[in-house]
Amino acid sequence: MPAWCWPWGRRKVLSPPRLAASPAPSVTPSRSVRSSALAKTKHGSKASPNAAPGSCAPPSPLAAAAKGADVGVPDDHHQPPTRSGEHIPAVSEFRALVVDEINEKDVLHGVGIGNAGRLPVRLVRLPADNVFEVAVLSWRWDGDLEVRGSKNIASAVHQAKKMGIRYLFVDIVSIDQLLPGDALIKQVIAFSSLYRTIPVIAAYDNDKASFEQTIFRPWIVNEVRLFRYNPTKIAYVGHSNQGASQFDRQTTRGREIWRYALARELLNIWSGSFIETIIGVLCDEIGMTCVSDFKLIIPPYARVFTAAYEKMSRNDYLLTAVILCRVHSKPAHEVTSNVGYLNYDRYSFIRVWKHGYDLSSIVHGICLNGVHIGVWRGLPGSGWRELEALPNAERVIFAALGMTDSDYGEFVAQLETRRACLVLENSVPLPTVEVLSVTYREAKGWNRCHARTKRGRRDEAGRGR
Image 1 (cartoon, rainbow, N blue to C red):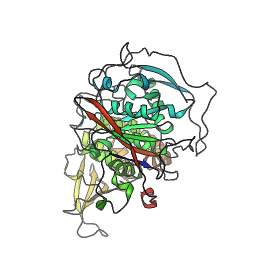
Image 2: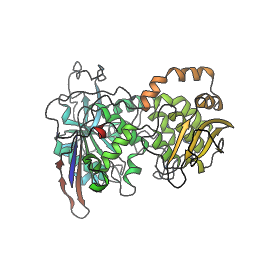
Image 3: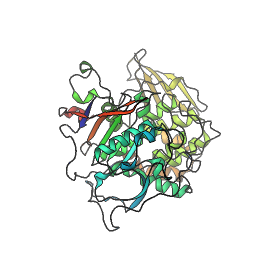
Image 4: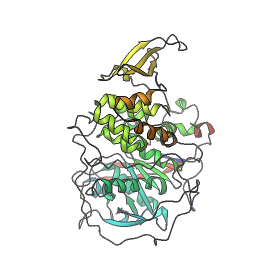
């Protein structure tokens, strides 16, 4: 299967690249945090039906001992400043898989981590002397490596070897799940910064769900948004013809970049906000193990999201999150899910006729405790729908949650921070993205990696989407 390399005409980075930093999004935690210390679950009542069975608990703690010595650079070494003038944070260290010592077939069968005769792990210091010898994995969980193997991690290891990667950071390996709450949050935030600073290997293929359902899972969306400003390289490796699948030329209007499923979804995520994924979770179209994790994914809303989660039903809480995010952003494409048909405790949808709307539109006012705070409208039979938040929405929501004027004042003071977290600026070039496909045969193991690069045309319309 052909591969796709983006920006157009660039196969790989051969010299130190221009560094880019995120002028917009705040660094947010990795999806590996599923513990009660970070996400409070009300007896499992808020777990999405589409999520994997079980509670919010993380995978079983990994072996604490990591073999090998520290590697990396002296403490006084710093990477160059980013395009925005910021510097990468101070030296940190995480456990990582030692790529050259791993057999991909072992990963497929869940042989364990860090023990003698099993997957090798080493403590690695960052920043590294050569940034292209380390990489971080962004992946759809499909195995814990202790009991059940992972095709996505095996695919990533296979690709890491081809890229000359020595150490691969994986959340279930790098993050110490036994840390107490505050220390765990601090480590997770530091780990998330890797998606913006070192090469990323992404693997989202999932045999049990469509590619769109997978890539719009909230934690994956968070990681995709983080590596929007990555100055190095993102390599996507698929094994089930999902992210690397191609569309018919006739359906893409001649635009080469739109032919790949991954390309379309990356651009949708980078040009949108979190509204699409929250609505998907609300309508049970996108899985999320712990819906309370939105406070970690969108930190400027942490306090109000926590209050809504604790005081509202699942649907009320998620609709509240959608409305709050809609105040400063909007979806990148048409919303097809109909939130108006769901059951709510404190919200109601009331049919209204409003001057200025097309007469063919069906318009509903969204009311919280009887107070009008939003508009939901759509065209019958078209599947097109739109949600608008009224100027009073934030104030009414804070009052309904019993939050104080001081809480609201602090929230208002963070206006620019919230806007920056929701909307990614398009002021820096798109990152280098390469799409590859690995063929796996159940009986014989790994067959080969297809890595032919197809050069696309520069398309300014595509860049601005």
